[in-house]
Image 1 (cartoon, rainbow, N blue to C red):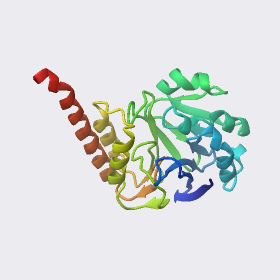
Image 2 (image 1 turned 135 degrees about the horizontal axis):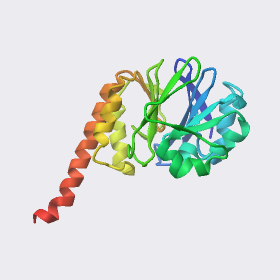
Image 3 (image 1 turned 60 degrees about the vertical axis):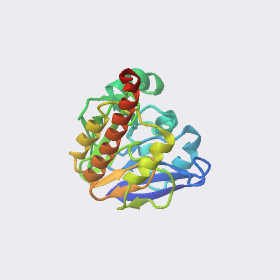
Length: 250
């Protein structure tokens, strides 16, 4: 395996590791994102077992010890499994997440006390500004959240739009259709009643780049893509509710 680097927006880099043995024959990508600034931030740590690959890749952009912030979408091995390995090599780095994530997981998991972020709180990285947005149960995880980099209009959207394969690093094509296929296969979303509303609220940010954790980054009309994804989840939730209520109507 190798970790490849692509600049997906000004000063934002995608570090991508393709694993062909997951969901063959298409395979699956695991992506971390480095946001440069006076205080660089990494979104997602990657799996603990991939730490060596990711550290070597990040070192091609900047010395790993310069990392100042480490954030992630929700508590799961690929999102934050290597958290403490990164904290060990970056002595000035601080983990950061929302209140729920810190209370239920990060306060205990992190080797150093994390920064608790309120919904909508901004971290000024010096040249870049990232805003934390709570998205509970979207697509899964009580503690789920995303980051929006305001200067480039980049939404670091975690598991939203998850898809198979590794055909390109950046696309301006359809990311909703492949995400529907992956949802049909993995059934990874929580299908919470407010999911569509939460995703549509992200569309209000009008992102110009969508940084997918599993799949290519998207450039273009991010709001339209988010609304289309929200429509699909509304369809799924309506169908699940109808199926659940069918015995009561019999």
